[in-house]
Amino acid sequence: MISRNTKNILVVSFGFLLLFTAYGGLQSLQSSLNAEEGMGVISLSVIYGAIILSSMFLPPIMIKNLGCKWTIVISMGCYVTYSFGNLSPGWASLMSTSAILGLGGSPLWSAKCTYLTISGNMQSQKVNKKSQVIINQYFGIFFFIFQSSAVWGNLMSSLIFGQDSNIAEIPEENLQYCGVGLCIENFTTTGNTTRPAKRLVDTLLGCYIGVGLLAIIFVAVFLDNIDRDLAREFRKNKGNVSFCSTFLATFKLLRNPKLLLLIPLTMYSGFEQSFLAGEYTKNYVTCALGIHYVGFVMICFGATNSLCSFAFGRLAAYTGRIALFCLAALTNLGCILGLLYWKPHPDQLPVFFVFSALWGMADAVWQTQTNALYGILFADHKEAAFANYRMWESLGFVIAFAYSTYICLSTKIYIVLTFLALTMVTYLYVEYNEYKQPTEQLTYMFNPEKTDLKDEKYVYVHENVNEKCVISQTQL
Image 1: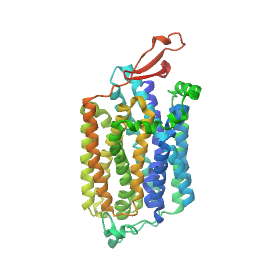
Image 2: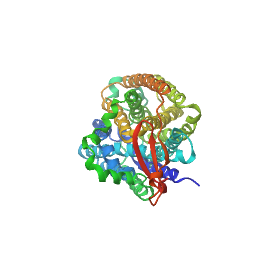
Image 3: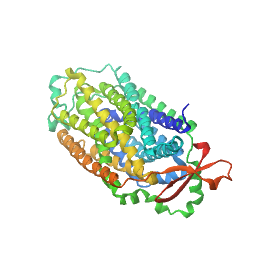
Image 4: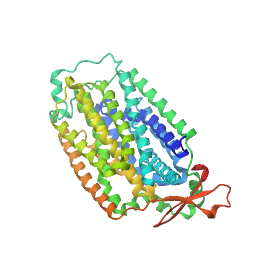
């Protein structure tokens, strides 16, 4: 029988699976579906720009006042609005719903990461294991389930768009513009960017809206509010807490040298994801095969990502983080060099899936291990740490999407390659410092001072931090 903590992790994971079945599938299509004047890519820039803004203050305020559960529920509602905005895509509707989604993005992910970290710390005391082992496993479980959303969201788009009667063969002369191709023409010309019939687009968006609303209901009903008492206590005493202190919590953590050194790694996560969603899908898949193939190629990415996320979450206990990060870096390096010289052609259909599978394997490491690393290194400042994570990752997205329509694809690839090199240098230096001076971990223990209460109480303590968190036994 699974523990209560594990049950909660599964609820969070399946909630995100449903939500990102909708958003993930829609994001993969933006550069092709709303290609006119680069509207789709610009909307993605607005999303991640708003996430940067929300990262500066919203996560600590929402999580401390509402708790992780209700922060997740409210933020999910922001994501669903984006699907409504795509029903009648225009600059006003698309940009406004993009901004709403972005404002909910950082609280959503910060609350999720905080929830997983708290649950991992609590479960580690119950099973008498190191907290970082359980946290790694929980993030592995989450990303195993979550990353499969790319399978279902993109399967829906491919099956629905595959019914389009306007699908046509791509002329051989147009294929010269695919991949690195001809730089000048890449700004205005791609192989097959014909928008599917409106009835098919509306059908797809209706499905996305439905699963998004289902995600909100699922989490609201089944997820335990494990930090309810903390949120209630914070609201009761918030008169004694400086608003500026809460507002600036994200920035105060930037004084930590380890966080500063992790910025390149975090931004690279945004660069590599945006490259696949914005460049690979448009300049390789849509250009050479057509938009109806984007979903199938991204299914391969999602399936590989999902399986590897689970495997790496378990494997990290035996190999350590460093070996996995190095594996991801070498995999991305091979893909980047291959994409520089590969000329995509419909006759090479398996190659499109090989690149997406390898990218999915590498992304599984970047997602699971970077999230777990933040949870381990900054366990006593979880909300601010994960807000920083989303802020810097989103900055990587914004930069990549912002220059998408202005520079050559080859230049974009070199930028990703440069950031990959910088990422590994700074990350390995963090690991070196961690080896020299390990971060002490939070542990949970029984608090005898609370035996007069109805429920037994547990506290977590940190040797170097004057902080206590009372947790009801019924929540363990």
